[in-house]
Length: 524
Image 1 (cartoon, rainbow, N blue to C red):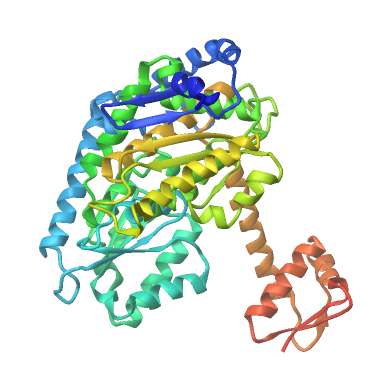
Image 2 (image 1 turned 30 degrees about the horizontal axis):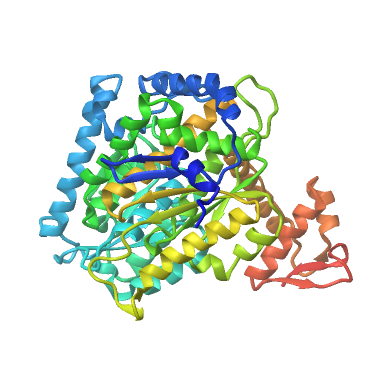
């Protein structure tokens, strides 16, 4: 049998850290040695930028902030003793609080033990804890986690209905840095109403994770919440899973946060000084650059072959897209950078969108995440000599080969098993890859002006909604255009306001016309 042509390339491009059980295979990416030669200068600058960031430089110039999520797993790196001590205090407080809740030192309003947790947050305040919970929670975890992570009233009611009569033994963890995030505020108010409807005092079942002195902090003090945990302005939401934001829910669920932080710290140490061909996070960033020509022209498809990691694609959507999706670079030039991320899990993907990946538009590169140990113990044979885990590995390798034969690029990250340490490693790998890539393309990865623009537009709509509701005549009818003229507003925006009112208020009626312009609205 002849040696496959990919064998020498695989052997030369396979990076592994034997001490961590972590490896990266970039052999199926379409790079050349000349690519590395041409990127050497940018790679050295990316390493230098990371060192400055970790030393406390202003890495977010738009908001004049340091970026300190790497200090969370190695407090000795913090540029000031006050920051170092706060990180250590947060870790200790998370553990102590969880122990007090688990032991019954902290009890419910009616004197019982807390058995569940309701996390109320949005974005990074929910995605990180959700990933950790889904990946690491044991079947006999001391507490179960539920989430209110949107302002959809139906979704919130479904979660609360699922909790049902266990609400009295459920601890609410409200996470909001400023306290002004609308989705979190709405979720808290909905939860508060549910507790009160059950004859319970919300504050006697609630803790706040928020910025010191924030609106939420002041509210928690005034209401008498059980406890308040401080968030720091040098930690962004999408990198807060190892901050108090992620540690409080994780410790309550019995996750080994020391191992979790240790996994990320181990990756940080490996990727702090190693040259580009030995640096797993820098190599990943370089492959992103190679695949998309430094312009993000190809999407990234995340394919974890492990049910426990199904939320990894959602987590990485925020981490990668919110960090890298930027209109301007650090020089102020319009660049429209970013990498679109989507995914599900293997082998489910092979019965869903892998058909297009193999035969459709070649506008992506895949990232396989392999977990080498299929399960604890000996697997059940589903046919002679073959287990379900064997099939899972076969589908991973088969999909990878099918994509390669179709000219599709992919990288493969491999870990030995899913535990707190290895999940910490994976998160650390991607966080640093994002940081390195931002340096390669000269953008600020740590602000989110587009998110703020969306919040402002939502606020404008709500103001208009109130004006339209007030202007809609009682006993008569009006078109969107007539009301828009009266309010000096855009007719389409007014029509959407009227349509929303008609769908949600019994007193507002819509008489359909041939087009939206001919629709008539009236208040009964």
